[in-house]
Image 1 (cartoon, rainbow, N blue to C red):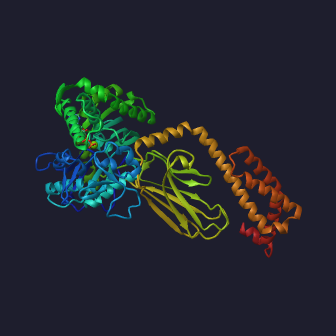
Image 2 (image 1 turned 135 degrees about the vertical axis):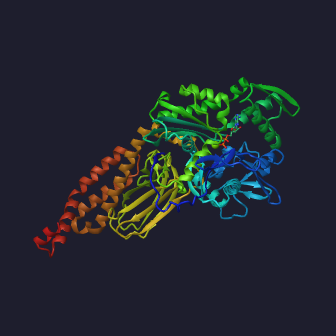
Image 3 (image 1 turned 60 degrees about the vertical axis):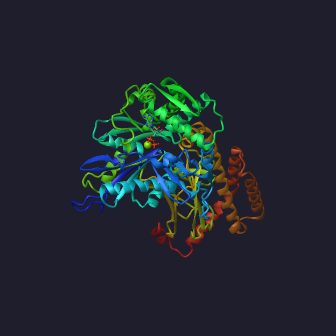
Length: 629
Ligand code: ADP
Ligand code: MG
């Protein structure tokens, strides 16, 4: 994430014509909207003077939709029709949901009833108002925030910067954009939450050094290690857990309460929700006081900070392990960090602050409201992007978490954009055809660090058709990868001699969470040697294939003219042997056969060369040849 100063042509407004732009923190638990007024960023209040909008959507049988506190209030009496934490489902597929699903009080179905061509396997919430997608529910939340802003700013919005966790992948980012489109608001940019927090703290104005942004919200945890130098933020590494947050504190506490109260394990959705609400209330109170009284289902007892700490310590430790990993990725130690910025409602829990202070050996910064800091940073960025600050334009860039590439011969992953490359980025690489007369090429887009495609994640496939028939290796196919500022990938392939082109916007049907990313990275390290050997084997297999195809074609073309029967037969046998061995896993055997075939065919190759030179020379004088060279 580099903070660059670049101007966007055509973005400057007419003088005196301020545009209406907002920053939106679309949170798992709470959402906020902020804007810059008279040079000062502020979060906007609703008519009850509240800046937090609970990210909860309630549907009733008449089709009426409620968002926010009212919806939250319905969550215990009508849990099946009250959608909470929808952000966890954004851009996820049915398969991803199954792991999260067991704890969910509402029902999910694999596709919308009214939407029969939902082939992507997108999960829907089953409500009395019909099947609702996570994108549609998020759009309801955005709509309320946009309305609030349009009321406050007295007019239609020109655009919004919406924040997403650093670990949101392409599908999750795309789902967020889709929600904005559905809500009718123009997205100026999706911005990583920790980056927004750094901007809110004005750290670009401050001294140089390494900054850690620790963001523990209701549903997600993000750690970002940034370096500020010459007024530019560079993200050295990111890490976290897209399924860990204050909600998990609540669940741990709810379970403890249930045990204390002797409540049955399999509570109904209503009781479950009630218990979670009580747990959360108690947890939040413990940030202010040393103990709280809890009463549920006829049981009452006392919970103190020590007990809470015991319950949540393992969860906090998990976040600290992510911090260690992120530091290691950045090649740093905790004492290299100059500042630790705290973001997210859960950093109000004192135990979190304590343990983070221990980990980094310093008190973290908590002076900006951890709820509002992200929305404020987004508002500052929106103000710039919409063109309200000509001459002071800056663009925040992010990095991609996993390498992107395509499948090449032998089932290998060829990386085109490496992980931790800052975006936006465009990279191209040239490939060629493998067979004579090949007129189509299949492009398989992958994400991951491993050498073999079976160990990487498949993102998309498409075909380039209509390549003019040429000999193998003559076509020049340029594959271009473009990742835009929002992290969305566009892949195109173009045959350069003919100009034919094909492209695809990659929108995978479901995403990776950060655990997957961590696992894939870890595997790439632990399997590095094995992968190298496998790559060598695959490359050898490809060489053998190429040799087989070439020789077969040559034999068919002029073997009979240039070879006597014995020679021809000899080569034919060698070729058959090669064919038998070329897909084997025996690296040495393949090498031996390649060697053998190349020896056996040496004479044939020489004769072919002579024949083709004679053909080329026929009818030309020596002068012509020299001129051509
Ligand atoms: P998100 O970004 O996921 O929407 P937030 O940053 O709004 O989340 O944080 C919500 C979480 O913060 C919830 O788990 C909530 O219980 C917790 N939280 C809010 N206030 C407090 C508090 N005073 N003490 C402890 N936790 C709190
Ligand atoms: Mg948040």
